[in-house]
Image (cartoon, rainbow, N blue to C red; front, side):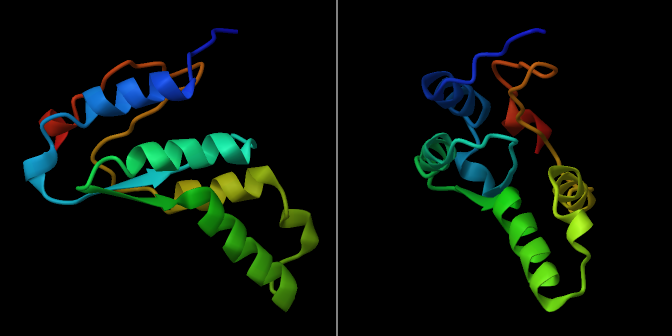
Length: 119
């Protein structure tokens, strides 16, 4: 398998490069999703996004988990749907009109995506 450097310092470089020259384009909302289980790592990535005054983010993993938990607790959803595959499906269903994607995984390991050119 191909490895992609997802250390926090590398993610910071990717964000800095990718979001350069976007300050004057208004607010940018990033939909954050990851299969990362390390809560500290996830917090570190969120903190990196806080360095950009014009960038806000929605934690799609948290929102999807919240929706599933509420549906499970109310009995509207069967427990068999309490799994990562179903959560991924919820996240994918909510993302159909995006202008750009920043991705760091074994399939998409791009060091810089010029967001300013995509907006």
